[in-house]
Amino acid sequence: LARLCMSTVGRGGEGNGGQRIRDEILDIQRANNCMGGFMEEWHQKLHNNTTPDDVVICQGLLDYLDSDLNIDKFWETLHASGIDRERLKSYDRHIGGTPSFSHDQVDGLRHSLGKYILTLKAVHSGADLESAAAYVFGYKQDAIHSGNTVEVGPVNGVATDHLRNTLNAVKEVMNQNRMASLRGGAPADPLQALSIIVSARQELRPHLINGNDYGGRLKDVIYLDLALEQTARTVLEGGTNALQSMGPEALMKGCALALENVCLSTESNEELVLCLKEWKKLSASGGDWALRAKAGMDRIRGALQSIAEKYNWRFQPAVEYLGPKLNGGVDGHVQQVFSEEVIRGGGAAPLSILLNKLDPVLREAADLG
Image (cartoon, rainbow, N blue to C red):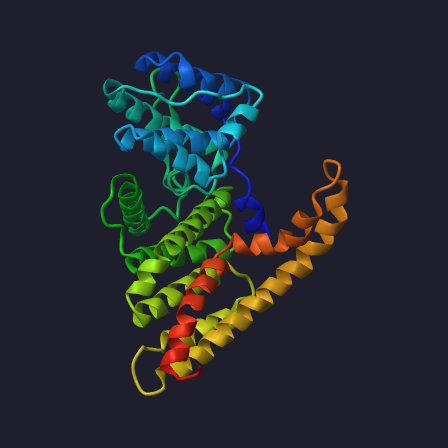
């Protein structure tokens, strides 16, 4: 429950984060000669009320800059997070313009906004991989053009060189995927990416369950694990078709990694762990491999269904009680699907998609019809 709550909220404005957001955007405008237009509208919005949407807007601007000023990439990034023109116009300080930079501004803005998004993420995106890793390993962030330097120390006992190297490998493959989507090219091998992410989560696991609060910094460790869990989900969602095209062996390995990702996020996971141990023994070869894999798949689906029922039992009564009382009443359909959407937001959903892709392959191989 604590993980679910933390996954829905940002880290918060610790220290002078909120003031830095307001100060640094003006520094960026002055240094890069963009005092009007879209940047000024965004500046006014940031001064009035900064929100998690600002992380998405900043990322959209960086994608626009990194794609040789292809404005479609800006809108694609915003739309992927549910932000459209109408939503931009709905802010108290509305944003009605469209970014328009010259090629001479690209390098300076990329540098400035690349630093600025760290400030935004530090306040709004607790489970963002880059900012979560920075809090665990410690960082020093100089002011963009003026102001104070921010310095955060490492979480002693967690911030090891081995974990740092593993996280650097994760960030490298995710950056490869990002640049592939912006400029074309081959994305990272999803199996390799998932293997690295799960390895990092395995290394964090003992620190999450040993009862040590690491001098009040356990929150930072949890946020890093949440970020890795979300990164695994992103890789799975983007790599499902690639895994399917690689054949049944790749799909089975993908299911194993996806299942391990779910195990690392689930309390009372004994049945899931047993499913994982049995699944890892399977191989897409031998006379009855498909039958054994189908039996394993059915057992995994049963375990996932039990988790879904537990979530529904825990949340739905509270949803039905609070729903009619919040903001004049939450839409009835939203109340009905609340628990289902909570489940879809976790690691079980992409695992289920992979299993659905594998199911007809196993049925055909086992002649099950």
